[in-house]
Image 1: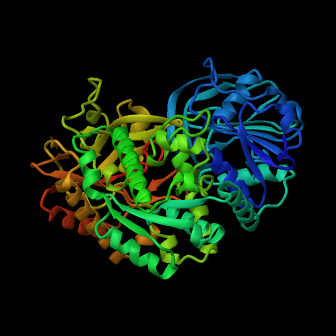
Image 2: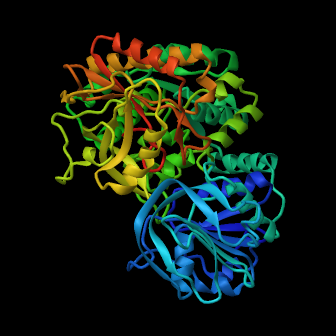
Image 3: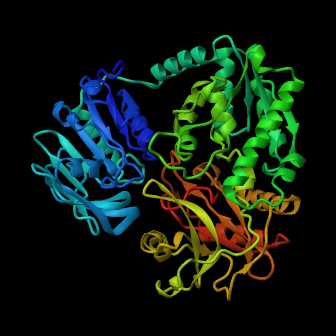
Length: 597
C-alpha cells in the first residue's frame, strides 16, 4: 500500500484511542498511519511496525473485527493493546474469556518479567488505565507472561523471539504511568522515519488546498479553540476573501459569551457575522428530553440557521461555497465515525445532512485528525494569542447538553440496594447519564456519596468512584455531595430546556467560572462542565461540578479543589434562587464521559 513505507501502522479495531496512539507516535518524532484492521499483510510488508488498537467487541463473537494473521510472518514488531492483545491470544492459540472482574479506570500493575524490552523502565509496580470486560486466560504457545494486576492474571505477554507483544492496559493514555516509556520502547524496536509538527503542518496545508480547490468556505465559529484555530487556518491558507465566519447565538451559550467572542476576534482582523437564533433553538427544543434527540435538533437548527444566513448573504453551493467545521477527532470517534467504533454520543457536527454533504465533498474539517492538545500547538504556531488558544473547551450544543431534561424519574432496573454495599452514606439519583466502558456506550445512574466533611473530597470516595462502576451494572458515575453532609432523599423535578432553566444554568456556570478564575485555577483545569440536574432536596434543582484534568479528552480524572474553594463555590451556588444542592463528579473517563449527555 502506497505510503506505508517506514511507517508505524495502527490497525484500527474501532477503539476510542486508535488515533491517540498515532498522535503519541508523531510526538515522539516518528511517522504513523491508521488503517482498517482488515488491511492485508502484503500491504503492510514495508511498515516499520504494527500496533493493534483496542475495540468495543469481543474477539470470540461472530462477526467481530479481525486482522490478517499473516502480519505475524512479516518479521516486524507487532504490539496489541486491549482488544488487540486479546486478538493476538485468540488467533495464536491462547484463550480469551469474559473477565471475572471488569476493570475500568486506574489499576495497579505488577511487572512479572523485568527483562521485557517494553517494561524494563516500569519497575515492579506501577499504575495503569484499564477499560475491558474480557481477558486473556491462557497464553499462546511461545509466549511468556510479562505483567499482572490483582484482577487480570495475563495483563501483558510477549513472544520475545518474534517481537510480538500484547498488553491489556492502555499505554497510550496519559493516566497510565510509564505508558509513554512502554510505547517509546516499542517504537525504538521499529525503524520509522522522522516526523515533526512542521512537516505535518505542511502536509495539512497541502491537504486543505486540495480539498477546497477553487471553492470558498463558510465557517461556523463557536469561539472555542477548535473552531477558532480552524477558522484562522483556513483564513491563512485559503485567503480572507474566500472565507467567511458565522457565530450563531443559540441562546445556549454561557452568560455574555457572544459579546466576549466578538471582542476576542477584533484584534485578529477576521470578519465574523453574528446571528441571534436563541428563540429558534429554544422553540425547537421545547418538550424534548432524550439527549440524542436534543443533539440532533441542535445540529439541524445550526444547519437551518447557516442555510438561512448563507442565502441572505448570497453564499450558495452552486456558486462554489462549502461548509467549514472545527470538528476534531474525539468528536468523530465518539460518534462511531470509524468502521468498528460504536456511538458513545452523537456530535452535532455529525447529523445525517452533514454526512451527506461530506459525501459530496462540500465540508472541510481541517482539524478532523487532531486532538485538543495538538490543536492548541497548531494555534500557537499560527500566531493566535495564548489566552484564546487555551480557553476551556465548550461543547458546540452549549448548555443544551449540560441541562439534563426529564418529565419523570428514572429508577434502577434491578432490586439491588446499591447504597447498602459501600459502608458510606449514599443515594442513587433518579436520573441517568452517558458513560463509556470497554469502548462502548453506557447509559446508567449516578450514585451520590455523603461525608461529614462535605467540602473535602474523601480519598475513600475517590477509590469508590472506580470500584463501584466496575462492580455495579446500575452505576457509571459516582458523586460527592459538597453542599450537605446528609440528604434524607432526592426529589425529582420535571425539567425541560426553556428560558427559565437555561438562565439558571447560565448564572450557575458564571458563578463557578468567576470563582475558579479568582482562585487561579482556570488554566489548570482542562474543561469544567457545570451541569443542571432535574433533582433537588427541597423543590429546587442540583448543580454538578465536573472539573476535568486531561490532555486529550480521551481519558480524564477529576480536578480536586481545596476545601475552601469548594465551600466558596457551593455557598455561592446555593445562594441562587432555584439551586438547593451541589454535587461534585468524582468519576474518571472511563467509565464516565466528560459531559453528562
